[in-house]
Image 1 (tube, one colour):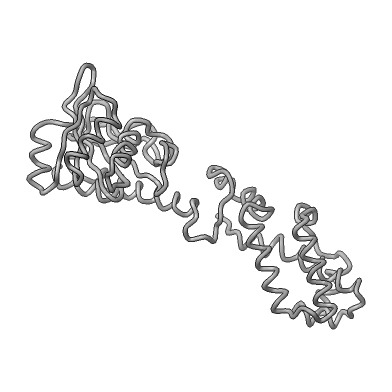
Image 2 (cartoon, rainbow, N blue to C red):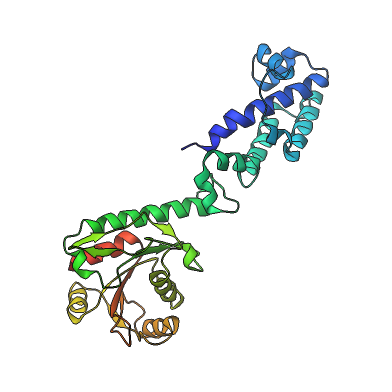
Amino acid sequence: MRFVEEIVVDEFLPTFRSLLAEALRERDLTQSEVAELLGISQSAVSKYAHGEVERNERLLENDRLAALIEELADGLASGEMTPVQALIETEVVVRELEQGGTLAALHEDAVPELAEYGGDFAVHDPDSNLREAEQTLSSVRRGLRLLENTSGFATLIPAVGSNLVEALSDATGIEDVAGVPGRILDVKGRATIPAEPEFGVSEHVAGVLLAAQAGGADASAMVNIRYDDGVVDDLEAAGYTTVAFDAEADTETAIGAALDECPDADVLYQTGGMGIEPISYVIGPDASAVAEIVREIA
């Protein structure tokens, strides 16, 4: 694990300071004046100005950084810019480069797993997709641990297997839903989880969850378990609201109709059809919440 701040310290800062020290010296500032402006020693200024510090080639080629150096050097040398103003302008550029710029690319090189998220991401943004994605995966992992440690859960796994899924807040497709690759299976009376959760790996249960959301359900997570009258009775006895939908109809249409009839449903179920196994779907705000419901009836 390597933080983007480490990239700033190790790669950006030496390159930035050497470029700025060099630019200020070119504007006839003494080493002492440059040292005072940058808050570093004169010997450090000498090293920066004489190229004795290793620079990052990709940052040297960055036009945004080059423009910043010229702006700061002109402003500091003329006295029209204070060191505090220079710091603020630099912080703005650093954040830009961290969010889809050269620093983000260097961070991705240092932490290859970041490439899985694709596109631009903002590491420092508390509402960023990257942060939410990691929180969602963590939530699914917590829910899986609950299920794995629930005595009797294996007996609730249907023949087709179970999955525990949770969607991002702005989910539009199964690639925005985290779940278990493959299925959770009953292996000799024990729930077996084949791998760590990922996004886009559960077509069926994720599709049912998205259909429920489209139908108005205020739920972000779902787990499928077997259906029979006893399971539904146990859920209702525990205080949960259940509603049936037609397994042989279009999923989104059928679930939408069921939720129109019962908007506050905690459990959606279908009683099977030609070649379709009966299944119950427990929904809730997060993976741990739906796992806890299953624990109550296991």
